[in-house]
Figure 1 (tube, rainbow, N blue to C red):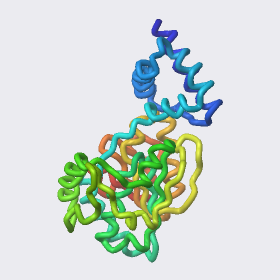
Figure 2 (tube, rainbow, N blue to C red; figure 1 turned 90 degrees about the horizontal axis):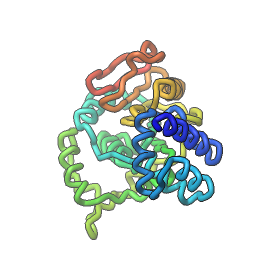
Figure 3 (cartoon, rainbow, N blue to C red; figure 1 turned 30 degrees about the horizontal axis):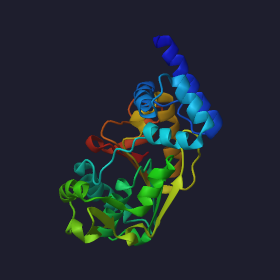
Length: 271
């Protein structure tokens, strides 16, 4: 039975790649299996084969499955000590560049984008920064563009912001209405939201800072290596790479191509 499940899972992932060009083949097998099992109950399918048949013949069903395969889990100023380290250790060095490009890879529904934009504005850098916010999920990108978040969540984000060295009242950045917080549109004046896959796409710009946090934990070692290669190629000489708290360059082929700037916060600098 278990063997059948493994075969069905591989066939589903291959079918998605062939039909829709979304490549989950080198994602963590445990993560994909967990999410597909959850999808079976959502789609009321008895088997993965039945789910495959449904998504192959119905693009709408595939978009619904994509939401489950790329479950966005994010929050503003997540791991505040990370953003405090960016503010203290990376920003002073970014200030030496006449113009700055920042790539937020796997931006999900935009929490990381707005956090970065607020930090850069407070440090006087936002006006000379271009931000690229990329993700493989078009619905997540749409939500990120809108900049509307639950007011209930924003209360937690406010605490994170304060812990991350925020210099103003967090409420200065949004308008509250009907249980939602609508963030200041000008924060995204220099943001380009774009569809980009770390599994299949290539580098698109030279950047000074790349933030890719809590994305690589869903990749296997091969795909992590591909992503590190893209980041290394994209970063300018002595550029910065920020990873999630459970991610590391250690034990990768690129470990010796970066040096740890703030190792506990997973902030690296290209050697």
